[in-house]
Image 1: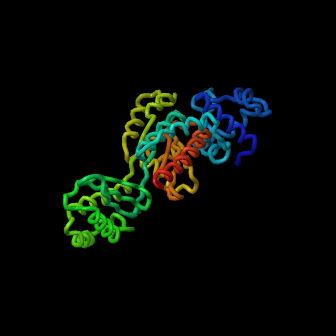
Image 2: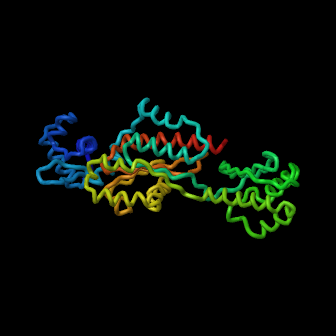
Image 3: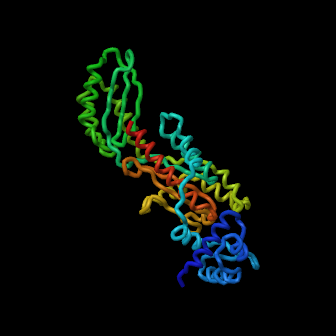
Length: 346
C-alpha cells in the first residue's frame, strides 16, 4: 500500500508536532492544528493505516502516536521541506568565524562550538585528512644570526615551520644549496615514497651540512604524517540532557561512554564517505553502533577545491528537527570549505 497525498499530510503533521512537543500525537490535535480539511475520525482512519504500514507507533494503550524510524526515513527522503537560514541564524554562524586564526585547529573548534550552540545537539568535526599528500617544496631561509627558518609545504597547502640553530660556518649560500638539493630529490613525493636509499642519496650530497639536513628531513616527514592523521573534535555533549528522551540516566551513561571513544566518532563521520549527496542522515536503528539506536546522526563533508578532506556531524534524538539541522549543516560545510580553501591557499 503506497501513501496517498492525505496520508503524507497526516504523517508530516504527526512528525512535525512530535518534533515540537515530544508528546504522542492524537487525531484531534492534528485536526485542530494543521487544517487538513478532514474530520478527526478520518484522520484516525489514516493514522490506523499508517500504523499498520509501520510509519507510526503507539507507545501506550489509548495514547497518541509517535513516528517510527521508518516514518522518519520517509519524512526525510520524501516530505521534508527545503529550508533556508534566517539572516539572524546566518549572522550567528558567520560572526563565530570573524576572529583571525593562525591554525586550523582553532577553526575546527569554532565550527564545533557554533554547530552545537545553534542546533542544541552534540556536534563533531573531523580535521582535514590528506591520505595522498605530496611534498610541494622545502625552503630554508636566514632568520636571524645563526638561525634559519625551515618551511615545509604540501600539495594541499599545509604549511609547517620551525626555527633551526645554525653553526657559524653556515651562510645563506649554504642554505640555498640545501634547499635546492632537497627540492630536487623530494618534490612531489609522498611519505611512503621516502625510502632509506633516497635519504642516503641526499645525505651524501649534503654531507657538509648533515645536521641541518637531518633536522629539515625530520620536519618533512612530520608534516607529511600530519596530513594522514584524523583528529575528531567534539562539542555540546551536555546538550543531551536537554532532550526529554534522555532523562533515563542509564541511557545517557551509555551514550556518553560512546562519545568518549574516538573510534566510534570516526565511524559515524566516515559513514558519509560513500554518500552520493553532500548530506547523510542516519536514523535510529539504521545506526551500526548499538548504543546509538535511539539517536539520529547527520553528517556532511567539507572540501578544498572539490576534494573531500573532512567531515562535520551532529548527534541528537530521532525526534530531531531534521529540516533545520540539515539546513544548518549545509550552510556550515559550504562556509567551512571556503575557509579551508582560503587558509590552505594562503
